Image (tube, rainbow, N blue to C red; front, top):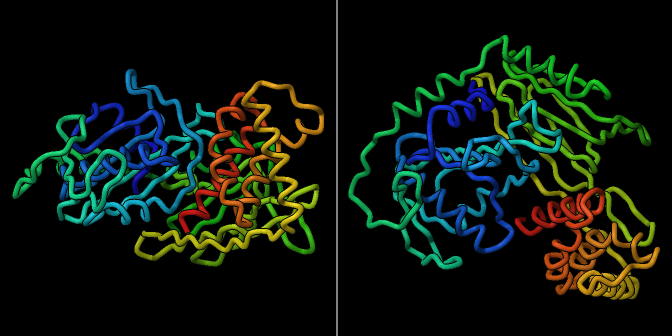
Amino acid sequence: MINKRLLVKNLLAHNDENSFYDKKRKIDISNKEGKAKFLKHICALSNSNPKNNSFIVIGVDDMDNEIKGVPFFDDSKLQNLINAYLENPPIIAYENIPFPHLPDDRVVGLVTIRPQNKLTALKKNIWKYWGGTVFFRDGSISMPKVFKSEVEDINSEIVAAIEKHAKNNIELTLDGVMSFVNERHSDMESNYKVFKEQFVVCWAGNKKINKGQTYYSRVDIELINEHVRLFYSALDEITIAYTTDSFTIVEYVHLGVQDRFKYYPMEEVVIRFRESGTYTIDTRLIFEPPKIDKRTLYHIYNNNNVIFYKLKRKIDLNQGEYKDLYELPNTYLICYLNGFEGAIQKLEEVKPFLKKYKGDIYNRYRETMRILRKVRYN
């Protein structure tokens, strides 16, 4: 099994950006430009490496290779985006890799691209790229090129050597467990479970029992063998269940209006471990949005618009409006889920104004957009 933290270090230490490896400070697939650029790099790396894995490391400074980190990204639907826009799409995996010096809510993103040994091209137009365009890597740049009948295989041995040097061992696994329990989460209850005598899953969180069901908040779950963070959230609550060969997470989101809030099941993630030393992660959206009376929502929607108007014009909010500001992303989302189509544009436009507040208000916005992203992909 490959230790993904070692893999990232090996990529950063021994290779500048090239035809099998790219690095980014961050990616943004919330708009067409960001999606198009991401698809371009996936397409180029897949075509330039038809017989080996390619990688994109996210959260690294381009100039000096300093690891800055990015927020935890749990979007398991990236493959859907790839399949929708690329002909002969590669198989991709996005993994969140924790590093000891980063804050708990920051990781390094690792995108692994597994080609299908076929030419990958844009299936349809997106942003300024035309459908049918074929991208290749020219050194560290992804650019359109005329297709060659056969791509020279120059990277397989290099990539194999890098992956070999990132193999795990017992010492690294034990160190990972001890660090998770005694250093990173010494202030809360931690647990671990070994699957198939090969995989170690650690989890930590604040536990509470409600009507016989155990819930966890401030949750961190990591597959220690590979140094991959499976789940992280400072706000949501989850339930955990496991058998001899599977580990199941059900995520809940806290939504409501006018002090009437409840937890709604959002997503079920099942990790299944096999005797062969492999595992699969299956994700299923189980979210049923709250149904709210239309008259109540009209009042809330108009109140949100007044707050947004004041934010844009730098007008001071009164005490009640400032209290409502925290729930503004949540209530815009509920309005959208109940048929207020204009709420989605408001939710996107309000981002720079909420970002100035940072702290809990902006964190609430980020959580709301994460929920929206999952719903829209499904």
